[in-house]
Amino acid sequence: MLPKVYFAPAGGQPGKGNVEKIHMLFAEAGFAEVISERDLVAVKCHFGERGCTSFVSPALLRPLVADIIEQGGRPFLTDTGCLYFSGRTNARDHLVIASEHGFSPRRCWPPS
Image (cartoon, rainbow, N blue to C red):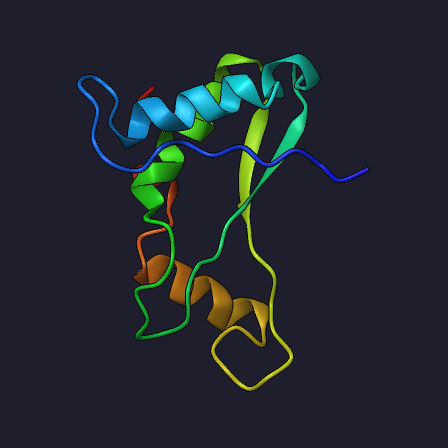
């Protein structure tokens, strides 16, 4: 059985910007039902390669992180390294690139 894939329509709709679409996808996927109080919740993202811009903006993770926190979860950002030579072949340099691209609690977490 293939897993469900959820899409938000591209293009603008009144009152339906990217933030609202992310909240809608969270709800439609049923994530609220599987997150319990104090669960550690991985938010898999791609921090990008040095010099590239083809990654999801860290600011767009904020609504997802907010929904996880609202359910009592404890989110953390994660990415996978790579086997080819790049700045993502070791943890230290991978975190430096993540920081350069704006992946930080200040950018990704909602205000307290």
